[in-house]
Each structure stands twice: as C-alpha cells, then as structure tokens.
Length: 278
Image (cartoon, rainbow, N blue to C red; front, side, top):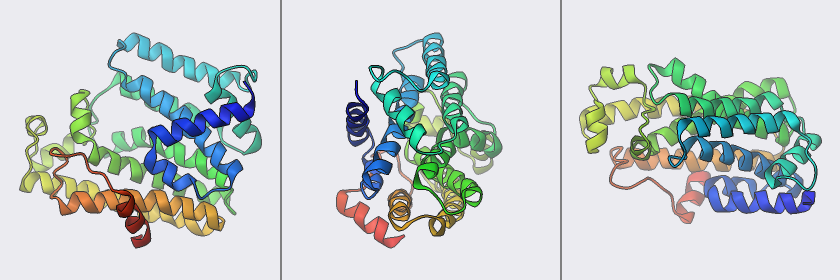
C-alpha cells in the first residue's frame, strides 16, 4: 500500500464516521487535512475496540495493547495497515507527540477497565486521555506560533468537547453499561442511575446537566484562547469544531436536556449557524 492510498483510506474513514470532525478539517490545506484524518482514524480504531460489545474484555484489552505495540513499531512498511501507514507519514511530517497517541490507547483501556467515575477529577483524567490527547496531537499539525502556550489550551478544548459528548450520549452510554456523569455529582443533584435507565428528566436532571454544561463552556473559553496562536485556516478549523459542539450544547439546553427522546444533532444549516454564532 502506498502512502497516498493510505491517506485516501483514512479520509474515507473520517468522512464516514466523523461528520462533525470532517466539517472542521475540510478548511485545512491538503497536507494538514490528511494528517489530521490519520489521527482521527487511529483514534476511531481505539474507540471502536474499546466499545465493541461483541468482544469479551480480554480480547478488547489484547487488541488495544496491539494498538500500543503498533505505535512503538512505527514507521511501518508501506504495504502495511492503511491507518498506520498514514499515521507514520503524518508523524514524520509534523511534531505529533507519541505520548498523546499512547494516552489515547490508555483511555481506551480505561473504558475497558471501568464504567463509573467517582468525581470530576477522575473523569477529567479520562477525558484528557481520550480527547485532550487528540487536541494536543492535532495542534501539532496546525503548527501554533507558541507550542508551549498552545498545549494546555488544546487539551482544555479537547476536554470541553468530550464533556459535551458525554452529555449528548448519556442514553447511548447507559446501553453500554457506562455512566460518565461523576457519581458524586449525581448524588449531589439527586439523580439516580434508575433515572438514567428510565430516561427521566425534570428539575434535578436539568440542574445536573446545567452544571455539566457550565463546566464545558468554561473549558471551551479556555481552549479557544488557542485561536490567536494559529494561522487563519487552522483557526477556522478549530472554530468549526468548537462552534458545532457549542451548538449541540445550546440545543440540549433549549430542549431541557432531554437527551433520551432523541440523540441531539445539528442539521447542515444548524452547523453553519452554530459556527457563525461562536
């Protein structure tokens, strides 16, 4: 497999699996767009293994450890796995920190090992691995003017987007046996896991989710301080991600945080409006 073929494949994966993500990266120059698609495809692979209910826990662990081993073996032969071929080329072109990719795998292993988080500190540690690490890796491709200043902002933005994902996907995660809302906050706001199972909304649920949303917005404000450190097209890419996810948050708030009746989503027009409103 050639590098060009590998990049075409990760591009297809990104367009098929990540419509919100694909919306943002389309504005990037082709080399950066291809590199970010390679990062997404690797992250998607890790996430898919961690969530595969058709595999027992031992097999999921084995496959995630294989992802970690593959990272250590990069660069790979050009006739190898398309995702790894593209990722190896992206890492050769841009200063993508290997530690961020290892953190992604660690996050996948956390999903295999546990299904509850006692407090925000524990949950944030998880979010930093599965999403903050993506922010760090992508920002290395964007090429910030001050990488040291950019890193904590990129991580904060990734965590903000993951927090909104958690809010949006409460029902879906419950079906997978997972609760990402911190246990101490469920107790504080008077929401039980039986309420989640029943899809029960109301004052207590709205208060709990409003707290989650306020935290996401604070993290997003911190993360958007990344924009002045980026070139125009990279900044537009980040604005697109942030705008779409903030649009989802606005939509959830407008619907009383009822994420059980229908999974929140934005139409194409809604995405354009959300980005323009950021």
